Amino acid sequence: MTQKNVVSWTAMPVGYGQNGFSEEAVKIFFEMQRNGVEPDDFTLGSVISSCANLANIEEGAQFHCQALVSGLISFITVSNAHVTLYGKCGSVENSYQLLVEMNTRDEVSWTALLTGYAQFGKANETIDLFERMLAIGLKPDGVAFIGVLLACSRAGLVEKGHQYFEPMIKEHGIIPIPDHYTCIIDLLGRAGSSCRVHGDMEIGKWAADSLVELQPQKPASCVLLSSLCAAKGKWNDAALSRRGMRDKRSSPFLGQIYAELENLNCKMIEEGYIPDMSSVLHDVEESEKIKMLNHHSEKLAISFGLIFVPPGLPIRVIKNLSLW
Image 1 (tube, rainbow, N blue to C red):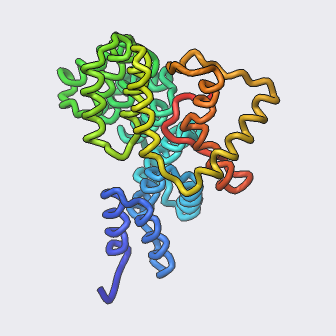
Image 2: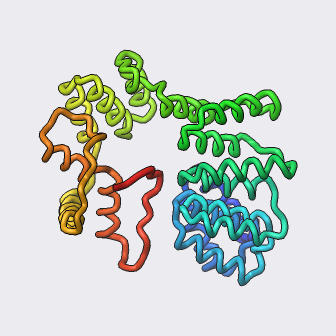
């Protein structure tokens, strides 16, 4: 094209973002600005959504400032994108404050905050917000129901989860998708219906193998199967599962990460930290159990952050339930 306007440029970051190429979407946005094209509300909302997908709160906050200066923050598409951004990045206080400041709110606005609460374990806030949505006459969509079902799962509220799931289908006419069923399965599992609790190796092995087929590069199936084997006292099988998990890990910085983590663990012990080993289901010596806890994936993520995140910036570990 010899001439490109804001519509032409906007099509690119929107297309990239909707197809999972969020980094490319942000790069195209900056290229658009270098070419002297000012974004409209649709462009800015799209690139902020890409920042949310990347959990890139730093660049997202810069776009927030741009929206305030340009006045585009008054458009609900831009405000909703910011509520989503802060919610996905764990800054739910900022997400809530933005929602309060909005002159106009729709179902997307409320759902963005609700999913932020749910993702970061704020079960009571999620349920309260969902009930407020119903009370003011808003019609929750499938995403909102995923959020409230996830909250019920995290809090172990089995009965309440069922109270939301059944009306979702019968009263709201929402056809469940795999994410809804996943929340219900997780809810029942945490409440005592999982293969690990019942020692059901056959179904547990089938579930783990199916997960490997769906996501062969992710170690989650090895972790789950290892825990199941350990709970049944099948230590050799547990060791094989852990070995499979190790085989899937690869990073050119592993040496640096483990060295930083060892330094961090030494400082913690000096401060009086005593690890809780009750959850380590492995037939090994106590020293080995401590080593397993020390090398937990979230701790490795923090170690990576301490090495590579510039001093003064926060380290954000996404999709984390508990650390120390």
